[in-house]
Length: 254
Image 1 (cartoon, one colour):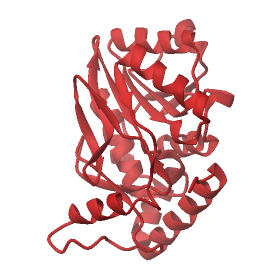
Image 2 (cartoon, helix red, strand yellow; image 1 turned 90 degrees about the vertical axis):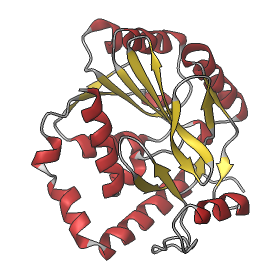
Image 3 (cartoon, helix red, strand yellow; image 1 turned 120 degrees about the vertical axis):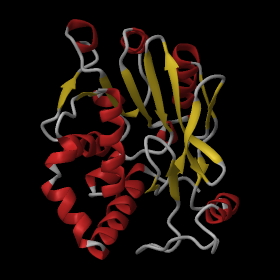
């Protein structure tokens, strides 16, 4: 069963909102922000325009980072100085010039967070997305895993949630969670599909059950971080775990 972008956004919004209602302190923290955790966080958001597959994801990053970010267009990557951290929300098909500019930023010491939107692309677009990752960043991706239909993934996820082996329930029964191991341990909801990832260097930093869905690797003097499970829409809906994770990543790159 294929899940459309509209269905994904609607499910993410409802589930995250339900979780925040259950834990009102988290809702207040996201709404008001924590000046101690945001102080010193600076990064650039690359606005891919029509090549951003989930515009809601870009909105989520903007809300999560507030005034501690600057928006860049693809042309800005070459024309002016970017921050040491560059986030690419919901990347779809990206042209050669943009990919090359990101490679140059990595070689110069930047951290690039590439949130993949490949799960929402057509077959031909997916192939182009995969080729860009392999050719410029030596990252290999697999076909999207359908989280709501794969019993294997659901069972594997339950095995990793604790001694009880029972998944944590939210407003939506058995919502899949991605477990992040870096820069700190946390679990973030995924509401649609995730992209399996591997590479010959670096290491997995997040798993869905036993499947790696996020990767961190050195490139040049910088660091490339691939996210196969979009967190932007969740942050737009107020997912506190996703916001805290993003802030920690940006802080690590400062």
